[in-house]
Length: 63
Image (spheres, helix red, strand yellow):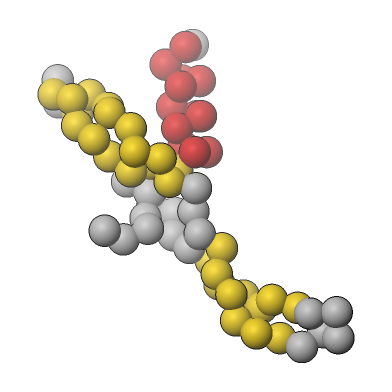
């Protein structure tokens, strides 16, 4: 399973880790994915969704 949000399409970002002497080595920032049961077309389905997208979906649902 890839580390991609099912709603927003967010993926892992890459960049450099910097040591105290500023040497650069590659690193990765992964997305904060959560497994959530969501109703899709009236059926419950388990999807992997980012925490940020989950928070905004809950806010839309409450309003």
